[in-house]
Image (cartoon, rainbow, N blue to C red; front, top):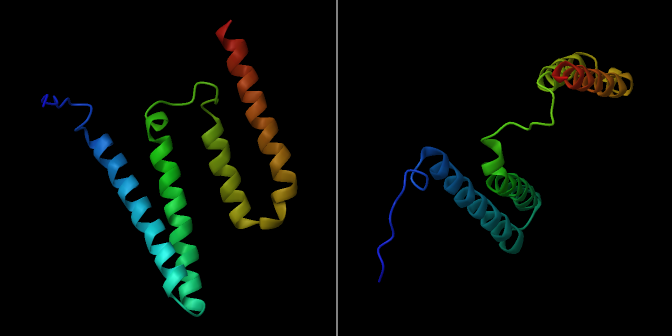
Length: 120
């Protein structure tokens, strides 16, 4: 039986965290199924729904983990700042969601255009 070499890539903290996300996703989805099959009442429905949602999010995180290491090159650097400011404004005044969506889109578009013209 050939011996498998261990590299720093397979034992890196990032890879260990990715495996933990997979293990937690499987555990949460299993708990969701168990609560759904064997539980009764509103508490079991709540547990099944909550564990299922958390398991799905952790599964998506496990799938996306390799792309989280590098930033998205197509996304302008100012987009996360604009998004955080928009979230703060919406947390303070939820009624502003209708005008906030086109404003945020416009600001991100302007910052992307400015970045494109700066390169040339």
